[in-house]
Amino acid sequence: MSLHVFTRILTFAGAVGWLVLGPGLSRAAASTADRPNIVLLMGDDHGWDETAYNGHPYLKTPVLDQMAATGLRLDRFYSAGSSCSPTRGSVITGRHPSRYGTFTPGCSLRPEEISVAQLMRQAGYATAHFGKWHVGPVKASSPTNPGAMGFDEWLSHDNFFELNPSLSRNGGPPEVFKGESSEVVVTEALKFIARTKQQGRPFFVVVWFGSPHEPYSGLPQDLALYDHLPATFANKQVTLTSNETGRNVKRLQREVLRERFAEITAMDRAIGQLRDELGRTGLRSNTLLWYCGDNGTPTEAVATVPFRGEKADIYEGGIRVPGLIEWPARISRPRATDVNAVTSDILPTLCELAGQPLPKRPLDGISLAPLFAGAMTERPQPIGFWNGRPRPPAAGGGKPYLDLELQKGTTPLAKLGPDGKPTRDFQNFHHPDIQERDFAGPRAMLDNRYKLVVDGEGKPSRELFDLRADPAEKNNIIAAQPAVAAKLEQQLRAWQQSVLTSLTAADYR
Image (cartoon, rainbow, N blue to C red; front, side, top):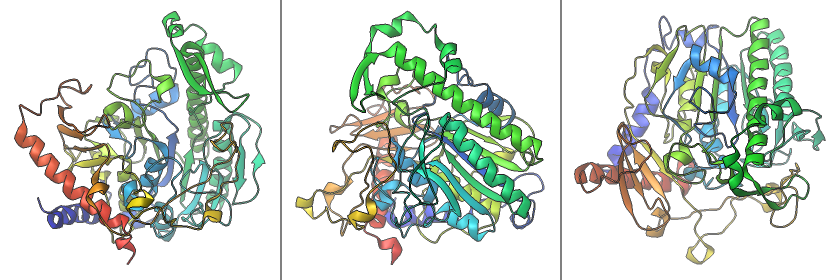
């Protein structure tokens, strides 16, 4: 398949979408008062198996379990990146993060990107962001803060946060908010929702939790739930951040998991508080809640993951995450789907529901609206994954895309950086042309059944997996299915060419 044809497929599928959104809901109707309020929720480092509804043997997640039992359960939901900043960029843009240089944690967006919040605001929504941002500084002077990317209000952190978080309101100096961090951001989100309800406007609210990212801490009642984890977990020491020193420390995994699970349960409870308040105020029926994780389980927490790999890998353990959608007015019966979906799909889906045209540039997501009525049984295009990386200065890279002063963060976190600072700075680089070296890095192409992984272990290799028969990616069948592998590799190369063209800033011209 040529690059021209593949790019046209991407653009056409994203731009056209599907006209049928569910029983009685057409594109025309999406522009009326019937369009939903929207709340996007995201856990930080929350892997696929870390919910009771996905079979975790110890975790207690009653609210997420209830959402899974009553809404749309996305059983094959993926993060576009295998780490946090890239995935968050995909939610904001509907595009793979390598298109705009958000390669790794701590890489910013580019100001020219068109955001989902800007599009929702154009559709008449009041917009707000709460919690982790991590695609640029949240300070007022940042050209990639939540306000610059379309949010009317924000109470946000440059990175992750723990109990009693320091957050910046609308770009101002950080303030300490006492309390359990998930409850803090949900409480603030509910205040915004209440004000918006009084104004009679639909709302688009993003709540990105700081949990369960390390270093871990929990309330006594949540920690007590996990006092009796298996003794075998104590046979392993893991490395993570010390809350006391901000530096790495080794601890028994049993102690670490007790705290991590407590954070997940507290986050689950905060989501329940949000759902309950929406119900009390009559907003829940026509509010779409979408929960997902931003990447797979991190190294120190890998204990029950049923897949190969972990956070930072492009194997299933690094990119398959919980995915749930609840919208009682339109998803009136519980449904589970095994259609592949990814965080890049969020923007096209919400644009369709809001009756808002898509940006006229290459998108990597598609609208999932047909899933709400069970009208989609297969994904019409494959999903590309790629841990890209900036080009080194010796090869013509390294020129900052934004003034470095504008990229300096202000909100402190428990983990000290390599420079000893409690804050984080961001980076993004110009990419003036395309060279063969730019195609390197772990990458994969996933169709409805097969997944091709190239250099997945960080060394030259090609692996093909039948994920329907082998979700743990144990059996490389590339020798038995050379034609399948060749087709996926051709699609992968064409997609990478499109991504690199975007990376040169061609989409902004």
